Length: 159
Image (cartoon, rainbow, N blue to C red; front, top):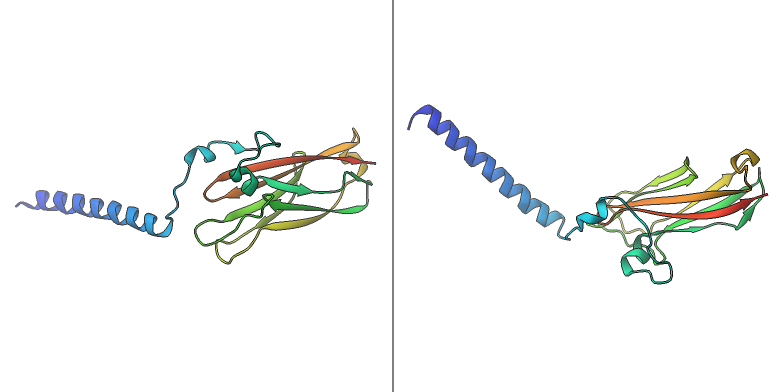
């Protein structure tokens, strides 16, 4: 066997062995199958009256007063799901974000370790200029490592 043939054979064997071990490691550390269609866009609840189990576990649930006074603090809670999303080493929430319309208001990042039930409280103060029409839309988003990006919104009045 000449040197060129030997190097080509050795390189081909190394590449094949590398892909095989990577696939085996992925199956060992991430045994849950992922629905790739959940990562193609933003997931939202399709019918609030008939939520699927996936929607109940992943759509952010926003709790806030229906009316707030401009310039005064109030609390907004964002929970991941109506029934809180369990977190573990193979299935976790990466982060929760809160926005007022398109403006970022807060973010909480989580680690893929520990056994948490992700729920975050934000204390906010809205100036009168933030609500020229007398209302604002709170938008909560979260990202699950297996079920993608989820979004919910809630309108509140600002007096």
